[in-house]
Amino acid sequence: MTHKRHSFSGSVGFVLAAAGSAVGLGNIWRFPYLAAKDGGGLFLIVYLILAITFGYTLLISEVSIGRLTKQSPLTAYNKAKPGKIWKGLGILACIVPFIIMPYYCAIGGWVLKYTTAYVSGGITKVSGSKGFENFFGSFIGHPWWPIVFTVIFILATSFVVYKGVNAGIERMSKVLMPILLVLIIGIAIFALTIHGDEGTGIDGIKTYLIPNFKGLTVTKFMGVVSDAMGQLFYSISVAMGIMIAYGSYLKDKDNLVSSVNKIEIFDTLVAFLAGAMIIPAVVAFMGPEKMQATAGPSLMFNALPEVFSEMGTPGLIVGAIFFVTVLFAALTSSISILEAVVSSLMDKFKWSRKKAVVVETAIALLLGIVVCLGFVEGSPFNFKNLTLPNGSKGAQMLDIFDYVSNSILMPIVAIGTCIFVGWVIKTKVIEDEATRNGEKFGRRHMYRVMVKFIAPILLAILLLVSAFGIDFGV
Image (cartoon, rainbow, N blue to C red; front, side, top):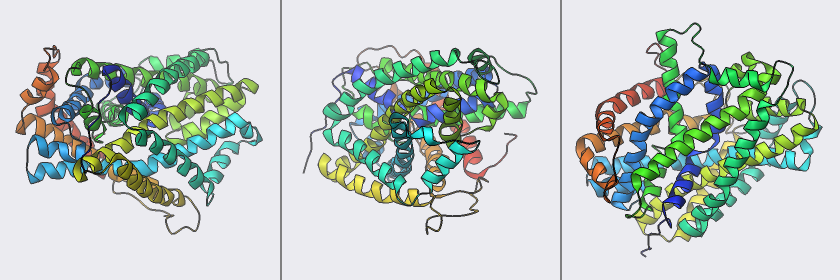
């Protein structure tokens, strides 16, 4: 059975859908933590430089490969250059979103739980110095409530993807992304007005924006570079097959270079605003030290609810708006993750969209349940004292899925893409595709150097650090 490949109605739909993919949980909980940990403005400067060089190189490469081949990640590489090794790279590029989908939706279920708790007023029952920590721990350790919320989140994601590129992904992105941006800006402005026990929102924004060079050494600076480079994977959705899939839906007449530039700007802006809405509030109520000590899920599900609680009644309203915002961000990203897999199944096996969505949803549901049970005491999927090869201790199923996809496969796929573009099909192919309508490729020379030499070296270092914990002075 053949299927007609749909396209975004125009560059606006593509940009909003791609930006929706890029703007996800990584921007909202990981970016602010890293910025606070790595010297505030110093991290921002390094991140910005990497975004317009390293990130841009990977982003425009993947979008161009997608539009050039009109194929999903599973089949695009082999179509551009037939060969077993490139067919294998396509398989790896498809496996990444396949692995990410279950645990990302499990976290999306956590966000949905907190959203309903704030909107319904149920969060007001939490109290005590360890109240929110216990609230979060009790929830994820429950044998079936996390599964319920994960299932709801996955089904909502699947419904949008089932509706297709135009009626589903593009339409949803055009609604959610403007709302998301307005909500983030609103919370960021409100955060500046906060007065807490440890300072004000203005103190927090200073911590965020002003570069802190105190105690900076070459080793610490390399740590900042490593963190910023790793964050770019989360932020711009590269090495997940997503941008290849979305690029395949971009019309030939649309300005590819301009679209990529807009995605780059939109994502960087939202990542910056995420820090601006979180860091001032946490610093005002907890101080910069606790902000720097708070990482990952604990920032969103423990520290921030504690901050909202300190605000009193207004905190309930801000908390509800915040988690609705995060829910929108999580949903737009999960949609893109699922689409990368669904489009691959459609292109490879000539399945209908309905069949591809149903099959992948069923698999994601089963694996999502496994991820949820990983936090349940006594479950066969609950691992205690498990240490990963990179040195991370206490890993659960979610951490294992995340380690395999983000620490191993994504750097490998990105390295493979750089070699594929820079040395196999050559950069001219990408340049010609990006400028097929006579557009200007303003960063052409930088792109050639980055994709051939600098990006592969940086990625190899990132792989060794993230996958195996090798120091390198980082």
